[in-house]
Amino acid sequence: MIIQTDIVDLDTATGTMRCHVYRPQASGTFPCILFYSEIFQITAPIERSARILAGHGFAVVVPEVFHELNPIGTVLAYDDVGKDKGNNDKFTKPLEHHDSDTNAMIAYFEQQSYCTGTFAAMGVCIGGHLAFRAALNERILSTYCLYATDIHSNALPCQDGNDSFSRAGDIQGELTMVWGKQDPHVPTEGRQKIYQQLTETERHFSWHELNAQHAFMRDEGDRYDAELALYCYKMAIDQFRRTL
Image (tube, rainbow, N blue to C red):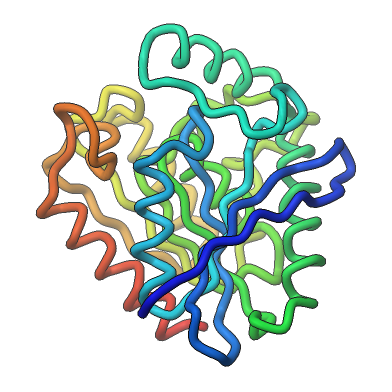
């Protein structure tokens, strides 16, 4: 499908949040995927990922996940300066603010003429965590998380008892978790902890551990694995078509 791109500045509980929207040019309505980025926000690799998903018949919304902490339009570089700034933002913004961002996106996009009103979530790195977090919202029917950081460690700021790991049992939709076994950010013990939590809470989830490094989906840099990336896109698209 040929796609088109729009920019929407949403009012949220914590300020204006810019979202990039990628959707088919064809007439009709499409399920909506909330696609959460890495700490670097909407970089070229994130945009390309969103375009791939949109080209398969989805309206893909990519928010600036740290909009409260940066000027609108901020994109951080894949270097030490960008990494340090992004990590500082990650450990500054409370999870509750991410929750209100998700609520704002659902409230807005369910009213758009091109959206069916059904929602999924997907994300990479911290975005994988934010997709997992979005799955706590009952409107999210299907979620696909890639190498989600900080779930096992409860390292992100939030109110007591409101961390994503503790609340895993509140996820109602279908969930897929994808990991790289050579990812130092989520070690074996961390993955096992999350698996056990999802099992004990009897969530509807699938689990995939691949021979891959962190950020293997990012088509820039030495860790990119094109074959695994295509495999994951296909898996996500099949899941979203089936569940939405």
